[in-house]
Picture 1 (cartoon, rainbow, N blue to C red):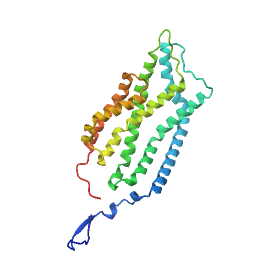
Picture 2: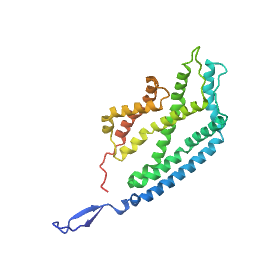
Picture 3: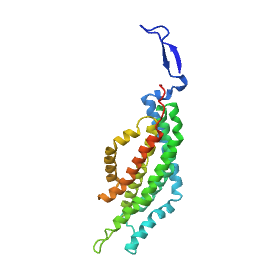
Picture 4: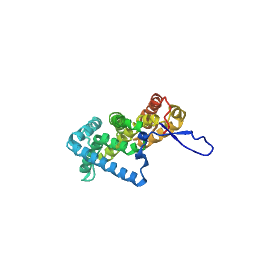
Length: 273
């Protein structure tokens, strides 16, 4: 910080005020509205490039990905009804399904680069000492995105599948449409992947003094309400049990986020800019 003269009426000539060190000034934060739009366009273009590259790689293995996705579900269905399989009613559905699976796998592969582009977009508005969180931001976002997708793939969706099969009776048979099944799969997977970003978001908001552990703990009742609303949206069923299964991890993540906010909260007051 530097002390410079600031003459003013009613003050001695030797009065001083503190100015920010020129090296700490963030000129990027002075971007105009059009410059922000141009920056957003650039980051979106780079994100599309990353997604296209991810899809190109994913399509090389799309056959194996489909086998890994559908085989366990069909095998479980055949345990109840021998010879059972998915059904489709339009001739182009298998092709479109293959394209969607490749796109989803490509998105998973491109996630780190997309998160990095997101960070580059918001970085100009940050303090210089906050920009050092670029690598942790990308790393944590990627890890929790994959954890959420893994939880949906290995826990939430298989449970939903068992619940669907369990409704079969001697007079009612479950004949799933492969397009509708995949639509539900994507909805649950992306929903849980985004929900699992909660600790990452809280981590950076706490480091930037935008939220505190006390604030999160004091508003737990509102968080619980929002969590159950989200669970009702992404849940495969309308019953309380399925919604509770989806809400359970979110409640645990919120509690973990409160702990994260308490641990990473800055202990020293921020210097004046």
